Image 1: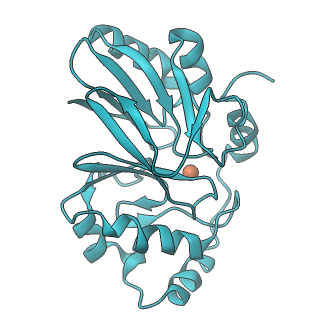
Image 2 (image 1 turned 30 degrees about the vertical axis):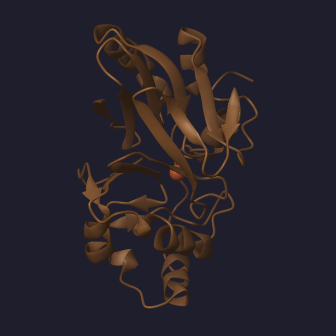
Length: 228
Ligand code: FE
């Protein structure tokens, strides 16, 4: 499998390019609008055909490239079934497969950061969106986030994946690029709680400022990043 991890400095977002092989079909996870020329150039250089662009959830901190990528490549745009972004070509359900020959990802419904967040599970890795981060977890205080759902998604779904599963989040603010399920279970400070109540209290006590772009990004992303 061909795999690239791309980074947007402005929003500290990771975007993932997956393809079966050089010259094959490709899929992008959580692409950032400003980076569209970079993606298109890389896709051309590798001789790839972009067939799917997918967002794990409606982002509040950057504008999605889904709409621009669809305009440029006629790719299919996908999000989970609970998204309010009706601009996507199709929505996937929990347990459904996303991808094509050589790249198969299982959609795993993992609400908590938002109520429409999905993770995407491959053979040896999981793309966790903002539900599970490296040594952190996604905030639960807006966009119908819920710390109880976050706990359930993490402890009862993601941490049940094999220990060696690679964890690729949608963000990192410190420079970490990848982790594993075992590493997060042991070292993620948010996960060292004894009960769901303890986790809820921890998350409700964070009092984080709203993302700078939230009032712009969320409405724009409900239109897949395209003008109103
Ligand atoms: Fe997010």
